[in-house]
Amino acid sequence: FSSRRRHTRLQGDWSSDVCSSDLSLYQNKQYKEAQSLYEKELNQTSNSSGLFYNLGNASYKLNEIGKAIAYYNKALKLSPRDGDIRKNLSIARKKVVDRLEERQGGFSRVLALFSYVSPQEYLVLLGVIWLTFNVLFFMYLKGKKGEGFRNVFGVFIVLVLVLTPLISVKAYKNMTHITGVVIEQKITVKSGPSSTFSTLFFIHEGAEFVCIKQLDEWSQIKLRNGFVGWIQSQSFIQI
Image (tube, rainbow, N blue to C red; front, side):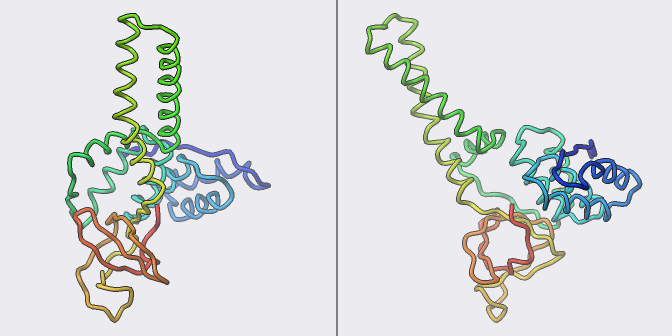
């Protein structure tokens, strides 16, 4: 378990002391107080992978596995290649009661390769590929047709044809798919958006899912193994 400290420079009258304060609280094993201070920071600053990471660590130490997984996931979305975040997320997931095997097709496995790229980087990568392709195409129209140039141009044609749909699908999923993590010890999954509907199954703290739709205080979710049902929205943290 990695507890490497990261701190965010904040705006506000009290922010000059907050980094030393939360570090002192964490080192003195006052994890609840440290968690509260991190949450206060979160209300006063923009999203920060370091802040989410620290919240994940404090939550893990408090054995709040659902919150730890949620915050590590939030941190990972901002810093997808950070080894410490991935390591701690993996450790936290091992404490989850529900072992949900994800149903993945070939296309899903390919998309998983892009988990090391942030949503902003998708767009930058796509922009660079298309810009380079357009420059090469313009050069081709101007008569640049040597063998080496044709090889390079051919490579970029393949990149455009292959990566454009992959990056587009991944970016669309990130923008439209709402994911969540259960933060209560055990919750009932219903067949509809009310406690009066029949019970389908139970899930436990730390279970991760995709939110399909929301209706009043209820959310329809889809688990990694394909199971679908309704849970109360207050029982999870949205990532």
